[in-house]
Length: 181
Ligand code: AR6
Image 1 (cartoon, rainbow, N blue to C red):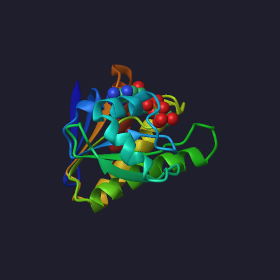
Image 2 (spheres, rainbow, N blue to C red; image 1 turned 90 degrees about the horizontal axis):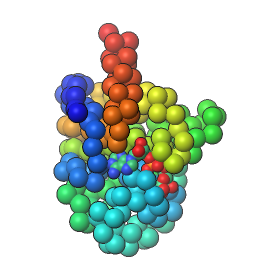
Image 3 (cartoon, protein in one colour; image 1 turned 180 degrees about the horizontal axis):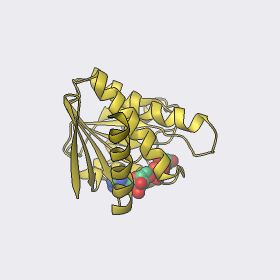
């Protein structure tokens, strides 16, 4: 299942899949502040990348919520992993700001390393408990406003792990695009 949309000069794709199999230049990890493997998508990325990824992460001194750090992809198809820490959902106003920063700072870091294609999971909507519908609107708005200013990123994929999440992101994206007209 997948749909592609043109945003400015770039492509934004929504798909159902396993992000560890993506061959984009970079994949994004929904990490914790210690950048330790953990569970969820992070555990899957560390398993697929091999132990060298954790060895590299240990040297980075952790990562604050809303920020992003770059490592190599090790045994993954992707050349790089961008680790970002989304907010633990609390219901306060800082949640949306931190989630927006996670997407925006990941894209800025990608751009500064000449990365042309990048795949994101649905950050914070698993173990961190962010409601998927609210998170999808924030994620997609952050990606769209970035692409409007940065055509150097040619392809952004949102890789959703369930058909339900895919439908949530799809209806949010269609709503955002309709409201922009
Ligand atoms: N490919 C794509 N998406 C996936 C995959 C996969 N292989 N596996 C899970 N997802 P989560 P968070 C989806 O919990 O909420 C870790 O332990 C999953 O269905 O991985 O940001 C870290 O160390 C959900 O939609 O990330 C942190 O402590 C989405 O990825 C904490 O979890 C995000 O779920 C981060 O929690």
